[in-house]
Length: 113
Image (cartoon, rainbow, N blue to C red):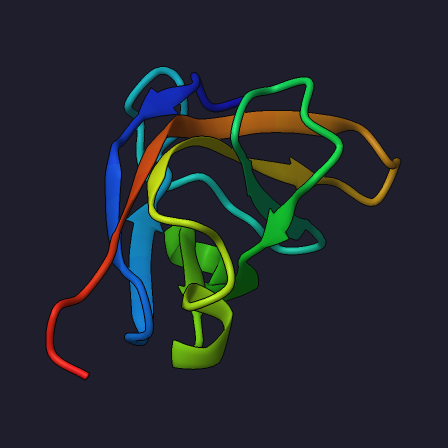
């Protein structure tokens, strides 16, 4: 299975956001085959926070190990500006979960209204 990859994100509040991740096998032998997997991603103020914000997640190209996470302009306007933590978890057909990406999210407030 893939190792956990760290990637920090910047989300501009009130704007659409999307990021694609390309997952590789842990031995770098090629892309991680995501056929039969589901994906989920959330961000929170801290790992123990009960308040969560869900990314929209899609396995965009299973054979190439590609995952797309996104937020609409409306969704990105909900969290208060600041720093958050996030992760992406994949689940196989046997319901085994693996965290594959983690990092921080900086939500920046815009100026122009």
